[in-house]
Length: 378
Ligand code: ADP
Ligand code: MG
Image 1: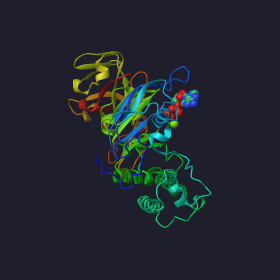
Image 2 (image 1 turned 90 degrees about the vertical axis):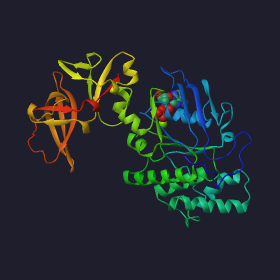
Image 3 (image 1 turned 135 degrees about the horizontal axis):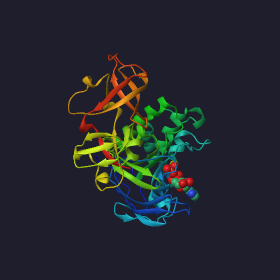
Image 4 (image 1 turned 135 degrees about the vertical axis):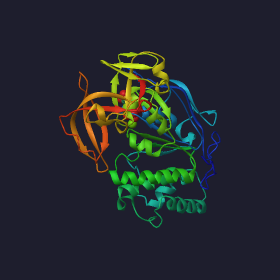
């Protein structure tokens, strides 16, 4: 990530240098509200300067609490947080100098767009001429030039969120924290604002910490994703590494669709599911699964093919008898909903739209390449 100094950097509190690309480090961060499990439990994570880091996870997994701890809106039960190596754990929010963006735009309705965006600069006693220049600059960045004198109510939801984004970055914050900022927008608008946020991240070059429960949004936007589960980080990595090399069944299921076979037995080069013995490539066993304990074999629907009979199955692949429960037409391809084995484990496969020898109710053979499967911890 280029750590180019932003032209919109305002004087920051002496405690934190305001510059693009701050490193944010969470060390054993815990927040306990006295519930059955802590809201955030022993989270350690280093967010690199200029990185786009997404905190992803189901509702209630501790994402917002983590963001609020970084912002200083909540106090730590245990652990510490540092910005560029300086401990900020005891600093009040305003001294952390962060930009924030939430789902609800929280614009001041009685102020114009320009006044809204100027607000954090006025608070920081930036000279008037500089305010005018920076507001113009940042409105251009969010493509709202010329709307200075409008009021929030005169703008669409997407435009209002762009104003809130302008207001959150105009003062050159230490980092930008975004909590489900697109959650209130419809699908098309969300996609276009995702692209805007990505572009602005590139142009500004500062550290973004983005919270969402939407895995597609996370995959689309992030340099890295920290996947949360019950207040803990399940796995951290690039979108590709989480999708292609999940450590656990939780990760495999949360990012994309998976066929899941809970394994009865494992040896060095085979696994057993029900009565079926499959070949195993040790390179596709996750580190967490290697450590022992219960494991499952997972394989993505796009990697599973369906043959009308055994003769249609190539040599050297893993296969399993299946029954077709449903067929869906997706344009370029078709998907089959399958049930496998004695317990009727439900799964999915993909096949070419030109393959016409398959129908609902048919007994078939599902197969996949050994290197496409992965053994994960359950
Ligand atoms: P997420 O943003 O991932 O949906 P949260 O961080 O909001 O999750 O919540 C994590 C857990 O902490 C949930 O069980 C939630 O009910 C609990 N929690 C969050 N804030 C508070 C609070 N102020 N008081 C008590 N419990 C809270
Ligand atoms: Mg939340």
